[in-house]
Amino acid sequence: KNEVEQSPQNLTAQEGEFITINCSYSVGISALHWLQQHPGGGIVSLFMLSSGKKKHGRLIATINIQEKHSSLHITASHPRDSAVYICAVRGGGADGLTFGKGTHLIIQP
Amino acid sequence: EAQVTQNPRYLITVTGKKLTVTCSQNMNHEYMSWYRQDPGLGLRQIYYSMNVEVTDKGDVPEGYKVSRKEKRNFPLILESPSPNQTSLYFCASSLWDSGYGEQFFGPGTRLTVL
Image 1 (spheres, one colour):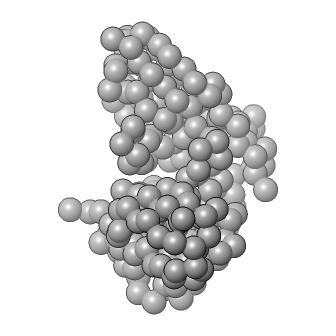
Image 2 (cartoon, rainbow over the protein chains, first blue to last red; image 1 turned 180 degrees about the vertical axis):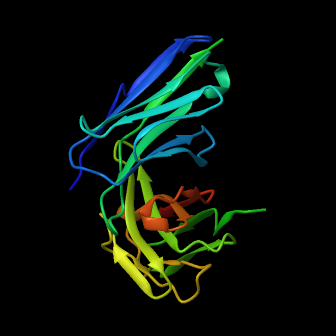
Image 3 (cartoon, helix red, strand yellow; image 1 turned 60 degrees about the horizontal axis):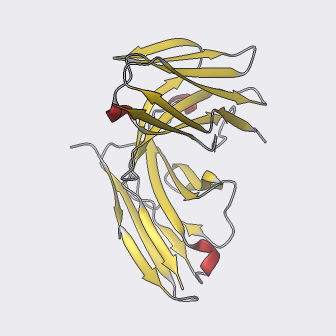
């Protein structure tokens, strides 16, 4: 079974700062997801990666398959980025998803 | 509008009273899944389905049943709910596409079992 570790668990930063959230997993995967959960509870998918790097607006996600590690970066952070960010991995074949416990991000004005 | 819907959104019930939480998607997705989210434990997968009549257990299937008779619907059934099933439940769907599908989540169902 895959073990997914996220760091940091909690992060408070000032508006405009560059944010990095890390995710490590123990067993090879077929895909990695980054999810965002807002205070109201809704969950949205930010990225799905199997290799390399993806960018969407101020968000960048990278994955290093050999090192079993992924990072989520937020450039020019804004208070509306405050949320819980969750990493999830899928093994090969028909495996389900295994989740990290999430990183609680607060961006202060 | 492409979406995943869940009903009810909030439910308070008593131990042993059977209940069903419905999940429906309008995106013709093959893959559907149920998760529960608990403080300190994060999200955990209960059951998933790769297509009609194909279901499989996730990490925490005990006390739950599912069925997939139609592609769009994937209800979660608690035959005899217990207080340890008090949780926030999410349904999600995605295209299967070799397992790489982006997940679309429902709004969540907050269940309290007294």
